[in-house]
Length: 247
Ligand code: BV8
Image 1: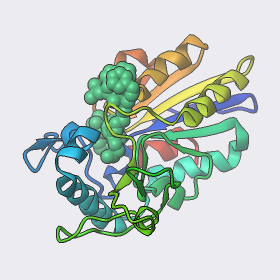
Image 2: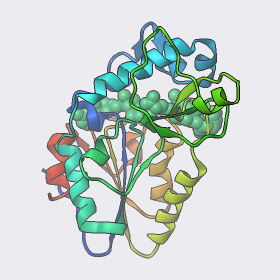
Image 3: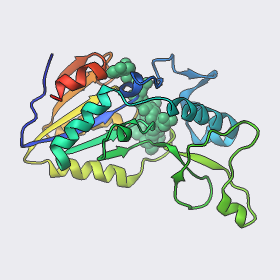
Image 4: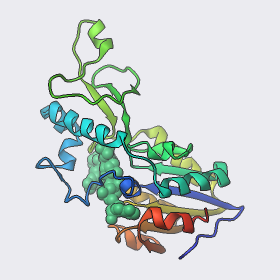
């Protein structure tokens, strides 16, 4: 069982993807042959797809909300929360996941790069995103109450970064400043449970290596960018992370 050296000088940046939630029973995107109701995932997770068929997109996200309500964090999530407690501000977790399981496992220093399943926002007005775990049925699509009060109808949308949409600049700045503050210290980059095909998240390993990071990938199979990592640990994250991170 490989183990990662984590000493008093170590700064640890972690990127997770859908694979870290798989053992909790949350389906991944590309393991299940990537199709959803005959539509490729990119189609139902895009602004064009939402404009074309908002009912289909709300059905997709409502089903994922319904499915994610009954699941719990697994030992991979808790191992990451444990190492955060040991490292404090020398640790940062960047997740592509929207299921909220890292936070439920106790992780606090979390950046949800692709948004959150548990928030919605208005597709028109500048109302801030708000907590919303509603499972919307096909009979009605959710409208914005603020717009309604002004006599207009505007659809709510999931607070999710869709394909073709920019990531939140504040999130990217937080990652960049963590990497800059790690200069002169021992930087380790760990990716877990991600196929490495979605950008700009998949580019993080290259950025970390350019800063001299030691790089690790824990994944059930070699990811698309596996060759960019010095250390490849093939296996399930719930089984590998507790030993690797020494929790
Ligand atoms: C953007 C919504 C500007 C939330 C998602 C270059 C630069 C910038 C952009 C691009 C670029 N090239 C192409 C683009 C466009 C696009 C992109 O990357 N497309 C890909 C398909 C080529 N990127 C964007 O549009 C981004 N926006 O950059 O804007 C721009 C736009 C256009 C052109 C240029 C610039 C926005 C990307 C965000 C999209 N939103 N999701 C949601 O609905 O969930 S992405 C979606 O994929 C999810 O967030 C998901 O997390 C993410 C990545 O998937 P993974 O998490 O890796 O999951 P996957 O199923 O693929 O893999 C799971 C892995 O786990 C597998 O390898 C499996 O083996 C492993 N596994 C399984 N079980 C386990 C396990 N491992 C360990 N243990 C286990 N038990």
